[in-house]
Length: 418
Ligand SMILES: *[C@@H]1O[C@H](CO)[C@@H](O)[C@H](O)[C@H]1NC(C)=O
Ligand SMILES: *[C@@H]1O[C@H](CO)[C@@H](O)[C@H](O)[C@H]1NC(C)=O
Image 1 (cartoon, rainbow, N blue to C red):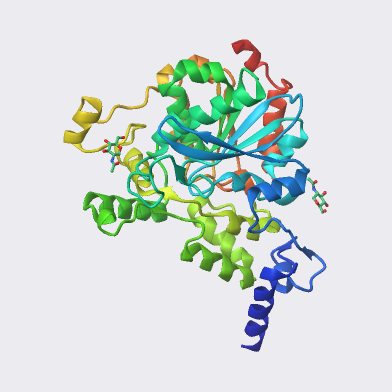
Image 2: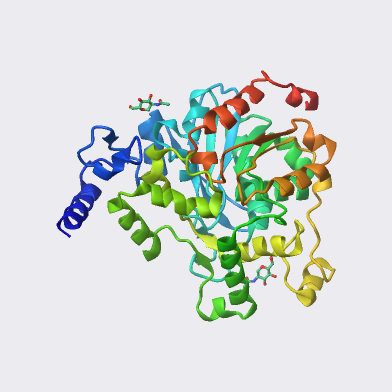
């Protein structure tokens, strides 16, 4: 009891003081405040722009408006005369912080140090992008979107803005998970424009077809959302979005995490959702990972993902037969015209990722047109869905290879295109 009180007291103090919040091994966390293998990372719970400026000495914030009135915040780690301009697009329940939450070893900084101009987007509704020209962020109208609008409107606006500011003709899009879903919407519904603006889409842990995903926990979440929305209960309770970063739930999670020293348990828990590779997670970043998780998601978006799994198709939002007739002129929602894509896409997936399943990604690859496949695909062993950010081997397995590809050392696929 005494020990527990001391730990609680110390952890409360650690919120204000510069007490250790990271350790080299899980074992070190047990004695985190006195262990020489533990240290303090100021990035925990800090603003993305502060983190960028602290780690790189530069950093900018920009605002972009979409055609349908959302105001998105963009962060930039600028680089003069860069080799390429790269847009990093996070996935569901995350925001730009995902790419800078690995201390000085973050993916955004790795790419920036390799001479790329880095842009980090924040999708509509997430922590940094909760403004609209006419809707309040508490209204039902504000949350009336899915990955469809993120692809059709957000991606368009952000990519055009970056091209205007940097004056380059084509940029590179790197998306993870839900950030790949919206890129497939963008590249298939605006095929000419996407091919004109994007040199390459790197799709990390791609999510389009969800026939084989195997997560009872996520399935339960999806089913609950479906039930709520079918019965219009979300309107009654005015719950149009979930996973708000500053919700009581996430505040509590972060608070408990501070004094919970058995960090391996947290990694076991997350592995249940993401794929069983607990040995791969880098122990240095447990607190950073917990702190960045949670950025608002619309209920409609969750429902749309569930529909993909249910229908085993990559299709538009299903409003029900009567409403579908009004929206699409057909009783069934149309599927996204992936065959129209003209942009090169590199699919990167891992066999241990239970959300982005090998069979689903291989099926996606099989139906992409030849123009989209010039750079092929990358199959990885040993990473789960989250290890794309936090895995010990992420750089050697993924990011160094992407840099090689962009620098033409392994393949000239991008030159064949242009
Ligand atoms: C990050 O910082 C640590 C400690 O200051 C240092 O040992 C390590 O080499 C740095 N890593 C990178 C990628 O710069
Ligand atoms: C949501 O958007 C759809 C079109 O995308 C529209 O038909 C519907 O009326 C909107 N609902 C609300 C509540 O704004």
